[in-house]
Length: 335
Image 1 (spheres, rainbow, N blue to C red):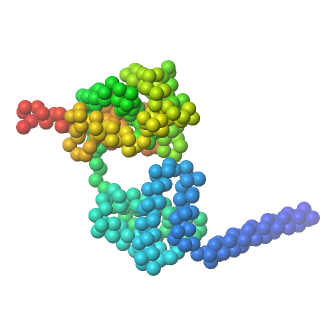
Image 2 (cartoon, helix red, strand yellow; image 1 turned 135 degrees about the horizontal axis):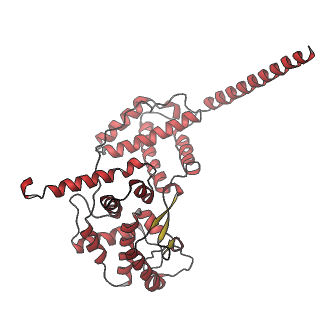
Image 3 (tube, rainbow, N blue to C red; image 1 turned 90 degrees about the vertical axis):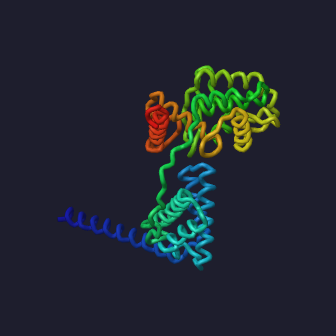
């Protein structure tokens, strides 16, 4: 009997502790709801979460910040001051206002992603009881195939820069971008120490701080090796600068600097695209499309591009089919 009584007392004690914990959680929840969160505080809280816990890149954070600043300005114009003032109608009307301003569907969809992320985070942190953006439909986006340069156009583009220190740097950057599919932000920031010419690979730190290894073919290695041996030492001013590619002043190459140089070389080489200018990202698209056209495994292409989702990479199979259809139309009986 004593054992049974002790067991009942222990169960009552555990039940009492659970009830006390629930009451404490309810008190914390009610005190949090009582202190309302301003819109600016809500955005700051979410962006800090994206930076610290999700580890998003600075450019991605800047994009989220711009979209959410635009949203909070819209809300302020409606007299909304706190996060729990946001309604589903506010979100819908904001998207309609963006459309009226002429913003493309893709840009409106990106803004909705930021708003959904904000609201979902606030619900998770118990600042909101319900998500006002959960049932808002995203704008429909047509699947746009990326612009791709032909292999001959790529060869002309790489051969265009003059045989000067700056020209050899530009040719090495174009060759590396096409040989590895790097994003322009990755290309300009790749450290010298992360390029292993002997083993034939480059180590890349991409979005979210994720690292991947991309192989380099012989032509890219030869151009980079000559640039490192002959030209980079003449550009280097501060030995502490780690970037592989440098400007004439000795600093790391910039996005704008490479974009301008690439555009100039493309114009002089007569390399054009039907829609839009030749850009660093077109080299990345060309890299992936040419690999797929030559039979590369889609998972391998995904790994080299640093895509988190295979569906993002699958667009290049559609590009290959589209290019095949375009070539088939050249047949004399196809007219």
